[in-house]
Amino acid sequence: MPSPVLIAIDASPSRTALLDLVRRYCRPREHQLHVLLAIDSSFAVHDHAAPYTRGELAEYPAACDEQQQAERAVAEVVWALRDSGFGSCVGSMVAKEPVEAIVDRARELGCELIVMGHRHLSRFGRLLDPSISAKVIDRVACPVLVGVAGAA
Image 1 (tube, one colour):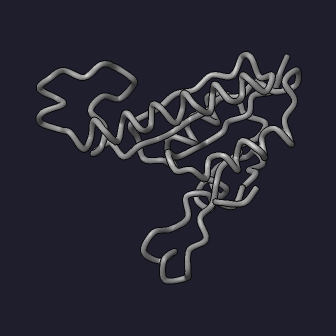
Image 2 (cartoon, one colour):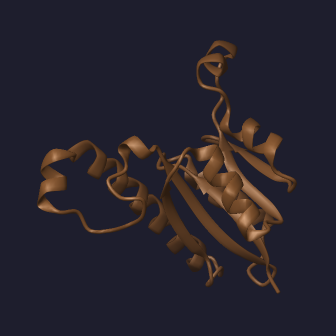
Image 3 (cartoon, one colour):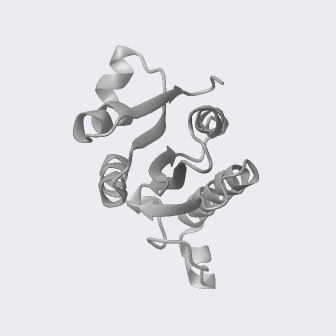
């Protein structure tokens, strides 16, 4: 039975580097890939992919746009991984704090590995916006493969 691997992405272009890491370290017959993108609940119209009403589009245009970008990013990554031979790859977008979403999903799946990105922040930047990858590493029992944003 394939081992579950969680790929935590965001909607930035740096997710391409994560795809390269996944293709390098995972094998289609050995790993079941699960793509996850967590968006801030204040920018989520729904807690999962769903059509928007005209009222939602009129009242929350920025939130609808943010959620649509997230849904598109998940779909693009899942498609790319399926095209690379990971035919059973699945993806989801959740409206939840990223660390909590990643840790919860990894535990739920019994993941063998988590693959996620890392931004290079200054020390001051880390004080203002602590590293999500560092928080995840501190809270999970499985290995975490951290790709550098923008690196291949």
